[in-house]
Amino acid sequence: MPVQPLVAAFGPDTGRVPVGPPPRVRLIAPVVLSLLVQVPATAWIAAHAPGHGLHWRMALHLVLAVAGPLALLAAHRFPGPTVAVVSGLAVLDVLTTPVYGPPSVALAFAIAIAVARGAVVWAAVSAATGWVAAILIGLAVGRIWHPGLIVAATVALAVSFAIGGFVRTRGERMAAMRADAQRRRRSAEERERVRIARELHDVLGHALSQMNVQASVGLHLFDRDPEQARAALQNVKDTSKLALEEVRGVLGVLRDGEAPLVPQAELAELPRLIAGLTVPGLEIALDDRLDGAAPSRPAQFAAYRIVQEALTNAVRHAQATRVRVVLERKDEPDPVLIVTVADDGRGLGGADPEVSGHGGVLGMRERAALLGGTIEIGDAEGGGARVVAMLPWARPA
Image (cartoon, rainbow, N blue to C red):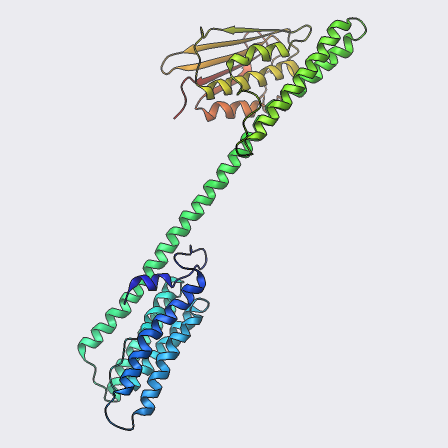
């Protein structure tokens, strides 16, 4: 019998992926195909059967030809009991037919569907019991079985089991592929959420810290030096405006087709960043040793955010008077961008910065790790804290 209609008859079960026609079509298709094969052939045999007194047996044969396919309507919900019922009807049909009738297509469907849906034991026990019963009872009542017919029936049963096993294996493989795709999608969504949270932390943390420092300066100098107080308040305004634009740019990636409102942060923006952090009593110097060379955009973006976070921590925690930012390139063994941020403040005292309350340290480490780089955070030799990031110069594969 054709394999494709049989394969199309199987629906999803416990994670199997639906293949082919809709569920209603898969439910009805084996019933219709079985009826089209068994009923016309049985009716023709009944009309041309020789002898008299056989009409009741031919009528029973016709009823069984209809009952077997109709029983397949329960195969998707009760595959095990269905294959047992269809097997019994097939055996009764074989033993009561005065002549050989058409093959039991309904039994082939029932076995294959049962195997595909996990009722392998039901299918094996039902098929084996029916096969043995047909042989032994047939011999007891004087029915002569042709060896070729026995071999053909055995092969047909084996093929039905093989088709059911193939469909089950294929469904499990597709279900595993779908589950793996879902896991990858969830993992990508988690990574995207972490990335957005990290961006928001860096943008808002830096902006709020700078606004707090500048507002404190403005309040302190409000009466003594109105001009510096005015400049501090202007810095608060500029910082808040830039922070809002950067937040909109970060959140803009969540909406299709929306471009960022500000350019992607890069090394060329470091002077503007440093100028916005100017506070009385703190000097921030930028030592750019790259001679105009520029690493990849991902490396520039990561370096900018690392410098931003390191400067924010220096302003908030270090109590430093001088901070130095150094950009340089090292070519051996592979080209890398080295970013160093060092201050002359109180340092870390040997404490782990992630435990001692220096915010954003985990984000800096993650940014470096995403590019295949490294970052070291600790105390400088002459006092103060030092952050050294080594990022691949070229775009990572």
